[in-house]
Length: 60
Image (cartoon, rainbow, N blue to C red; front, side, top):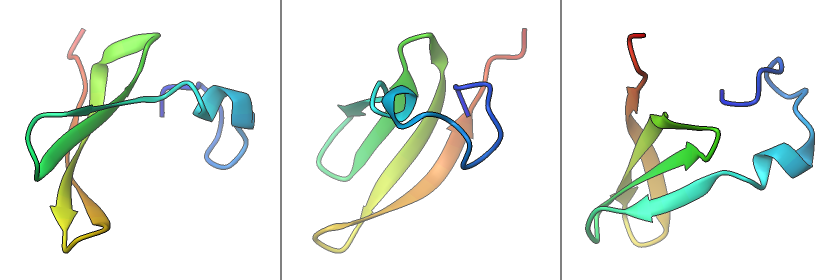
C-alpha cells in the first residue's frame, strides 16, 4: 500500500517514509507523504500491541 509495489517487494527505504500520527492515547494512523489521504487506523491492544481497525482511501 502506498508504494506501488507488490506486497513484500517494496524497498525498505520506501517503507521508512511512512508517518505515524496519534489521535489520542488509544488511536493512531499511519500514512505515506506521497498519498496522505490513504490511511491505516490503529487501535491500542494492551500496553504494547496495536491492531488495524480501519483503512481509508480516497474515492477519486
